[in-house]
Image (cartoon, rainbow, N blue to C red; front, side, top):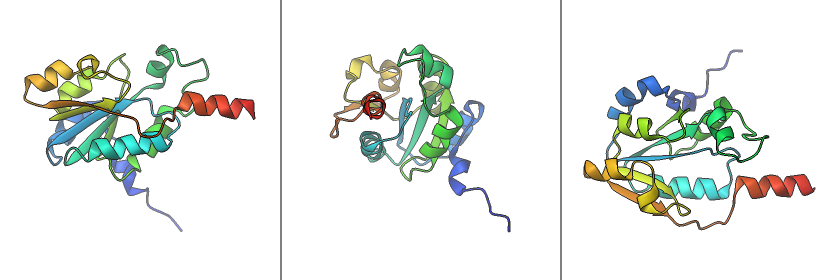
Amino acid sequence: MTYAAPRFEAKICPPDQLATRAAQLARPLVFTNGCFDILHRGHVTYLAQAAALGASMVVALNTDASVKRQGKGDDRPVNLLEDRLAVMAALECVALVTWFDEDTPIERILECRPEILVKGGDWAVDKIVGCTEVRGWGGTVHSIPFIHQKSTTALLEKIRRL
């Protein structure tokens, strides 16, 4: 018996298709980004809160090379980009997931022109990449406080101690 590919895989969007596919999404559009290496409760809570600010949400993931440049450790990311994309796409709150290899997601932000830009509570609003641009076209920028004090780095440290 042959099984169809999971439907969520259709939410994985190459950067060169982002502008076209984002234009088809319900507005207002929320945009967020990150590594999302090992998805945990803090991530999914934050993503659900971010998505609730609009009608649909695009998530841009750092490529593996981009994660390595962030200095999170030689063994990061633990999960390769194609796996992180699939896990992110499987979340109900995510409309599209794409990626960026640059050090910031500014090109993806400019391509999909979200009305709402969101990052986690460890980012001051005025330091969020794309803040000036999104506000410039009338959008809003949010830094969502963390409810669950979780991190992939702390999780990996705990695993290593076992």
